[in-house]
Image (cartoon, rainbow, N blue to C red):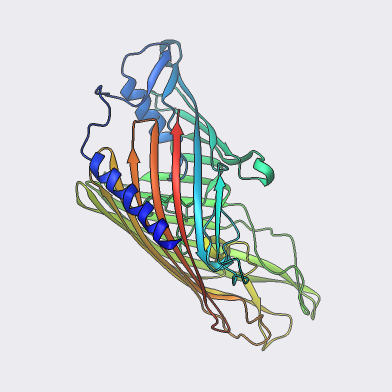
Length: 424
């Protein structure tokens, strides 16, 4: 079976390489956006306005190919959709989801279940990109997107926000997230160590100089801890988190220093009073354009009480853990993570992405903890993407995940995933 899989990979790669140097389309296109109603002059301006309004999220297309231009160019409206179907073949231990490759969720395989083939189209999406007064200082943008990742292909929102001048408000990624520092993956989850959280946010971005930008934000309060332990209990959160970053950019490259401050609240059942724990995190991320066809990307973060912001351990109740030396007290779980990647663009049709990521939890004391709790994970991805046209793309990706719990009994899983995507 493995020989068959490897042969299929080799054949796909050979086909992609053979077609890599062909023209993107038989007809040269100046803009990816076509105006179907309204003035068709300067379609490139419409495309640029849509680009400025889309989320910094490589898993979201957001760029409609067809647009409506209002009278006197007072607004641009694009309604788009994409169909993303994938087939995956897993071997090794078990990965529960066919959509998201999450190393922290790897479980040992049972006898006879060492491999599985699955298909899904849940990441297909519908989106709306609206820009009002595009050539005015009061330009306002609204973006909405949703996919079918809910149970039984239930439609659910993935982004919904409004932008006015330097302000962004709505449901999207926290300002502590830097998706530009991560290459594209067919896997919807992405790297284990990326700082990535969607919530209700408000953020303000202010250019300081031509090359330096500053952003400060407010994230809706959220927490991920065990609801009730022997001596503690979760309570309603009252204090929003404050993320911020300072970025220097130049000639296709940038470097960003980020930080986040949070106040995590819980109930001390020993003293029958609420307690606050200060959570904090720092991150360095960026992109370096080595050549026109090669970009190097990466990020590194460290913090205490920010587990819910780290992609692989979000929602695992690890923001706070009980302090075994002091009954009724909890501490912010220390963690660190790194992500390194590369984007290779061989031509307009053919590209490749490489990615490595690692996440580590640094428990203060493992006494009383479940020995199967995750201690560190690793994530490796390599893919080849072939753009048949501006509308259709194919891809193949290899993913490897590794999970090591407190007791040291590690597990790993391999996945081969193919993508067929149509964007309109």
